[in-house]
Image (spheres, rainbow, N blue to C red):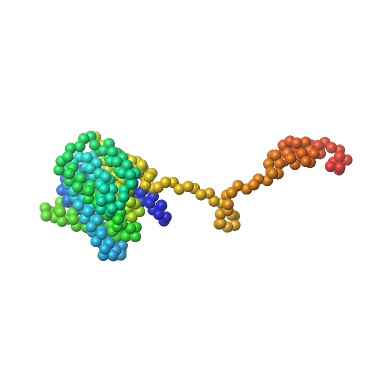
Length: 345
């Protein structure tokens, strides 16, 4: 696959992933009212880690020791971010939590410039500002800063560090193995946090349905897509593409349109992240081969067309007129002529 096609596919996958992320805030908020936050995360990520280890054992064995250590570090960042975000969501409205979590779009270029010593262009800062304003408009009716908001902001900083790290170390050939290592480390962190107080499991089919949805779409697929996509996208661009759908204004009823809203709102980052359109190159092929021929305009035959026909008719001494008129007049003259005239003609 060409690099441009890989970049386009990575952007599309991240946009689809934001729809999943956007749907999780209200599901998690409802679930953590019945389960301790760390217990929910332990169940979710442990199931996901076991599935990924069974299915993707070979890519994990193909990793080098350094790649395993990188995956463990990235998994620790992501696991801690998940714990802090879920703890904050227990005391913070879902829309406000979505806005604060989405602030990693601002922190990602800051960390990129400070840690990696990379220059961030002005157009990227402008896109960051627009994304942040969009988050605020979608999410906020008011904002008060408390413990839950501060913990969620810490989670956003860890998410930003995770994005920067993936952008630096991820590659398409190791994306699957790296995702499995991250998932295992996340599960271990959550289990360590949940076991001292006793692990509380979901008790209703609805709760188990939410957990399984989070396992399949928001854990296994999400982590693999993000790891693979960031092998083909800069960290700041990936952050902007996945930022907007995390917010959503809440009224009395749960927002059901949030996932599709996320896809539509991400159309703007998609337009610039896939790069400018490439000019089309028109080529012609010979019938018997595959080599292109020149598209230069050929000189026109002076005897071709209406003017050339008039010149030929004038030279022949016949009445000038359209070719069809001359032909029909000649045919009618032949039909009306006598035998001697037809013989002479």
